[in-house]
Length: 267
Image (tube, rainbow, N blue to C red; front, side):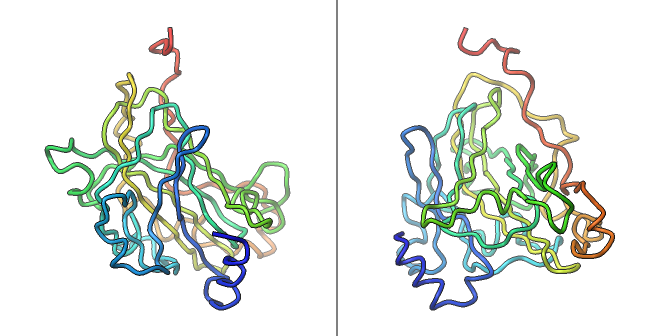
């Protein structure tokens, strides 16, 4: 997408000024690009296409409820048939062609799928999967309070026409197999009205590792978030938040795997 095309889209679609979504993925250096779903393009040219790695999200509008049945992978969440090949220990980079919200945390999740001969990720119900968080970022330490500090959500934005890139490393000792990856941006700039922006894709992860997280890390969507969590039900511009310098990202802790040298990878 050219800068001219982007600016034209923003000028002619006012609702896009508030929202956005995950458009592409890259792996490796030089990067190999994988196309995601585009709700602004013709659905018949994307649905079921053999190259589609992403689950369908039909609108750039957010999900407003932590208990929404589509909070796992957005609405309608219809699976594409393809998988992104990535090795454990590699970065998977999520590509956004624009993102305009500045406030709130970003998280990345994985959930294991059955093998291909049992339906793979295409046949799963994402609401029944055991999700575990592998990455998170929120308020950047030392930049200020919740109202005036810099959030990673703002820091990853570019304003020169280049895409906004969000790299996340696949845990190095993760067990090889098929997974659904879930990226979520949570915007909390409106009082007591969190906005959830999740997108999901299918991964075929390779590597010699054999690790999965303990069950204490597993979450369901919906279910991972309490609607009354003070990190969600929040007014960051209140006097209290102007005196607050720490933010707890909802959804529990990150699992990044045991130390890489457990298997002496590369020895």
